[in-house]
Length: 249
Image (cartoon, rainbow, N blue to C red; front, side, top):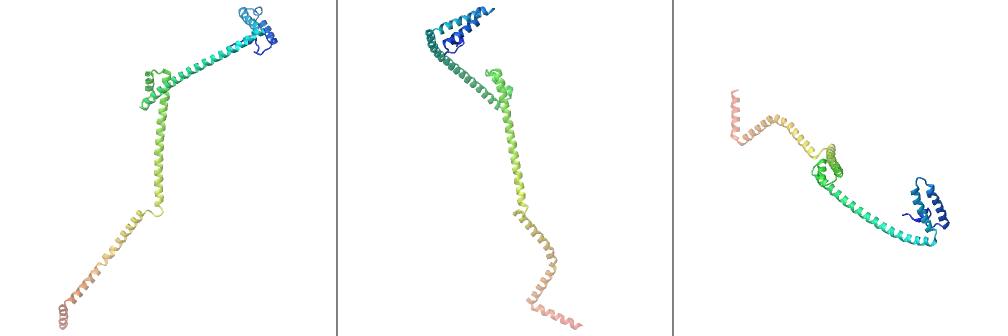
């Protein structure tokens, strides 16, 4: 908002002499006789300079102007602030509505993407929901890229989990082998003892079989002796038989 001081090119606290010098300088610059070819513009500017100087060169008029101008400036500033606040509120409401609409479109796109639909399907769905074409393409591209990144991340996590399980199993197997190497497990020791007993038993069996005839003969002799002891008549018969054989010789 231009003031009379601005027209003369002086500050609001300028002295009377400063105002007079500024008026003379501006009048010479914008005098119609000095602006050939632009007389109309120069004449209008020169008239504004004269009116400004007429008010500011008079102390009474200058005081009234300063008072009125100050009041007008306060009113103008207040009105300007109200307009700015109203404009800011309208812009904020418009942004909120736009953000809500954008969020709704994104939510719809994500829902269809979770169902396995590709980017083109997402784009068509958004267009069917009265979404502007450029925004629909942007949302479809972003959601499709996000869905692909999530799938890749899930696959990578599964691969990492499988790799971790495989490594853990390998460590467990290696740890079990290390524990068995020094002395073997209790089961292995028991199996070795059983195998040793079996081999020892098989080694002793032939010797027992070889000694069996002698043992059988001894048993028969003992049975004969027992039988002789048990029957005295048979023993006397044998002696009598031996005596008769002696007479023949």
